Each structure stands twice: as C-alpha cells, then as structure tokens.
Amino acid sequence: MKKVVLAPQGFKESLTGLEIAEAMALGVKRVWPEAETVAVPVADGGDGTLQALVDSSSGEVRTAFVEDAIGRRIEAEWGALGNGTTAVIEVARAAGLARLTIDERDLRNTSTFGVGQLFLEALNAGFSDFIIGVGGSATNDGGAGMIQAMGGKLLGKDGRELARGGIALADLTDIDVSGLDSRMVDASVLVACDVNNPLCGPRGASAVFGPQKGATSQDVQDLDRALANYARVIAKDLHTDVAEIPGAGASGGLGAGLMGFFDARLRLGADIVMDAVNIDEHLKDAELVIVGEGQFDRSTVFNKAPVAVARRAKKYGIPVIGIAGSLGAGFREVHEHGIDAVFSLVNRPMSLRAAMEDTRRLVTIATEEACRAMAINL
Image (tube, rainbow, N blue to C red; front, top):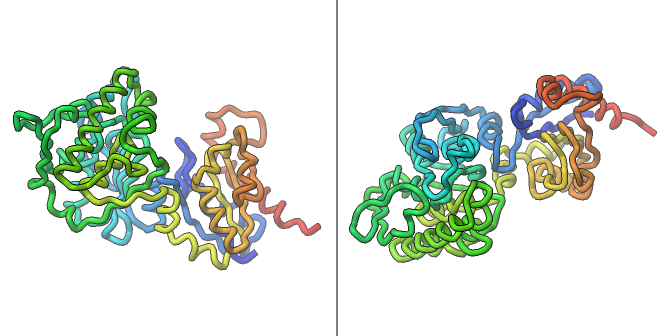
C-alpha cells in the first residue's frame, strides 16, 4: 500500500475532520507502516465547512464580535484561508438557530445583521473572495439584516429605514445601495448550498423551513408575503429577479439576498469543498480512500461529503472505506454510491457520551481493522 487518502469530515461535538484524519493515519500505519497517508479533511457546506477549509489550506480561524439573530453581542468565528484572499463565513456562527433557546426563537424579527458584520470584518482584513455556508440559520429575512449591516438602506413608504427582521419587509418600498460597502463590487461570493428551494410559495423559505425554526402557520403566511414583496422591490431597484431562482430560499431567503445584492453563485456545498481542497489531485495516485462522518444513514447519499469523495474516487477506480460513529437506518445505500465497506466505531456496549469521549482511539481501532480486512489475500 503506497498512498492512502484520509478524507473524513468532522464528527459533530467531538473531533474536527483533521483530528479524525490524524487518528485514521495511526490505524493505517499499524497495518502498512510504510504507507503515505494524506489528510484531506472535507465537509458538505454545513457544520464543519469552515474548519475543513481552514485546515486544508493552512489558514486560521479568526473571531469577531457581532450581533446574533436577536441582537445580542456574541463572539463569532470566521475562516481566513491560507491563500490570503478567501474568507469562509458560516451563517450559523452568527445567526444560528442553535444559539437560541426555544423561547427566544422569533422568526418574524430575527436578523442576519451579524452575518453582514462578519463580511465587514473579513473585508477590513483584506479578503475579497467569500465562501458562505448557509445552513442552520435562525432567520427568515432574505439577508436584509446583512445588507443593513453593510450600509444598504431598506426604506418604507415614509422614507424611514425598516426595522430588522423578515416581517418588516412587508413594508419595503425602496432599496438604496449607495451606502453599501463598495468593496463588494469587486468581491466574489460563492454560496455552499444543498437545497434548491425558491424564495416564496409552498416550496419557499417560509413554508419549508419556517416551521423548523418555530414559525406558526400565520407566521409562515405573513413572512411569505413579506419575502414576495422583498423580491418585487429587488427586481425594481436592483434589476435582478431572485424569486424563482433555485436556492433563493436557502437559509431563510439569504440565498436570494446574496444573489440579488452581490451576484453570488450557488453550488452544492460538498462540491465547493472538494474543489477547494483539490481532492482530485490527491486522489489520482492513491490506492485507498478512507472517508468518515458521525453517522452513515440514508441521508448520507444526498451529496454529503463521504459520498461526494467516493464518487470522485471511483473515477480513478479507487476502493473507498467508510468509518462512522454509528450506522443508522439505510446506511447500506452508500454502497451504491461508491463506498465499498463501512465500519462503526462502537466495538462494545457503550453510551454515546463514552463513545464521544473516546472517539480518537476508537477511530484508530476501526481504521486498523478495516485496513487489516483490506490486506487479506484470499
């Protein structure tokens, strides 16, 4: 065995993708001491994307004080990639649903203001290219708060600026971008997105994602009308029709705001990460690929990172092993998408907490056993 590519994503609330890859490398070396192991941590645009891109580019995680979805001052992380020009922003770090208690969730008034503040932080640090992970937001404001933070004005009939939040967009009549940060004119914005929902309607941001964020049926109707008005004013003042673009409904309509104001491009998150880490270059002369995530189940096949890596590996005829914290319903479907065999970390009766506290050692053991199986010559 000459070269093994280790391309796991982070195990949520446990280890980062790079830490998992390091543990995998120990397992590989126990079977093939002379093997070259190449760590290429990956992600699919959701949780862990920032860390994976930072680790793979020799960049760094930086912090900034911003406002969360309900206006509280928090410290949020963003990624400065090693090329010195690309910043990674995960919306959930600033305006995430997980930051709010159930009682604090107020989809009518939550705002992406903090996301705009992260943009400004990166711009001030000299970054001009952006990768945006849009999952996990607590908002439904179409990115309006982001625009307000960056100097854009959203005006009502009386010429006054609107309050923050999605419901205020029902009163929007004019958009003034004269004060919007001019550095964004030359910026490149790539949105990591794994949904194709339009902005409004039965498949739109409010109807599909609103209830998950605590919206009532009345909230959904009101917010959908507000976003429809937002789209009309964007078309009038910015000459961009965002209403029906697939992905416009991502992250409470943030996809629409990023496209309408910044001419952002939307791509599947896993594909963005695969290209950013140059996965194909690493795969070309590999003899084995090992992927991993917290749980393999039926959802893994929907362009999640392990399957995204496996599909590319199969272009070169490379076998792929999967290492998972656990195996859920439908996990065998991954075999139809390029992952040849999967192994669970759980090798004896144990609690979830015990497994998570011992993840590093368990990953090494599972990887070693998988490699021993590969080494058998029948």
